[in-house]
Length: 284
Ligand code: PAF
Image 1 (cartoon, rainbow, N blue to C red):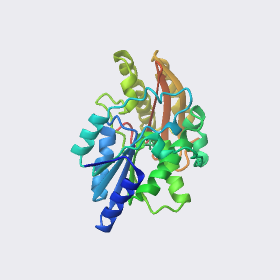
Image 2: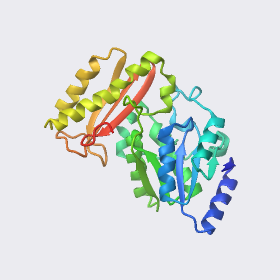
Image 3: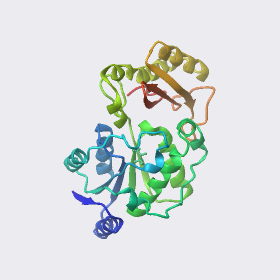
Image 4: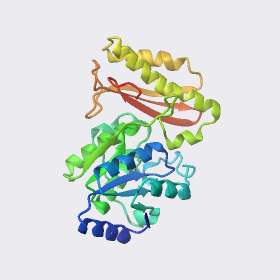
């Protein structure tokens, strides 16, 4: 695995691979890698010959009161895991490389960016899409891999790829979970042992939704109410939103279908967690 920190070096490495006729996959990350990220690498390797992983804690996607400074980081461990899993190039730019003084252009997300996380975290998706757009331009990957855990991000990246006619295939990789159902997230590192236990409430509530759907419930309102009742019984968990939505633009639905997305955000202590399922699949 080669370590790259500058844009000319990244472009040079990619150009050589392309001249060799290799198919290139991009796995964008903010580091502090877990099995969820490594599942993206596995998928990238299935779909391409070489994998570029970017590791950049993108300041643009953090609000002024968010956890940019304390976002967990462990570059030596990330390097080792990426290399073991077969990443070909690890791109770790500084903020000055990605956003040199005078850099001002931002991507404006599509309509789905105004819901859910977009309400709770103004500017977040503009920051995400700006860095993803920049990475797409630098790497020009054949395929880019994203986790379904961040389903709203997936929807917005898909919309951007479509709107800007990027010839990039998107691979959406299922959420990786702990045995107790908790979705892997770098932010789980903030949870104390009791909070870690409380965090099971999120996947528990999603499972409730799935059980209701399997039992014949089709009303989105009833499914949401059932989830709220479940979460009210979890004292450390403060629900921010529950959404029952169609999968293309995340518009709310009244009647649930197998492809409907059920998503939620909740605070466990000070830590904000998100999770979602496809209703017909449940917590898998
Ligand atoms: O999903 C993430 O980790 C980030 O939002 C991404 C896509 C790497 C952009 O910074």
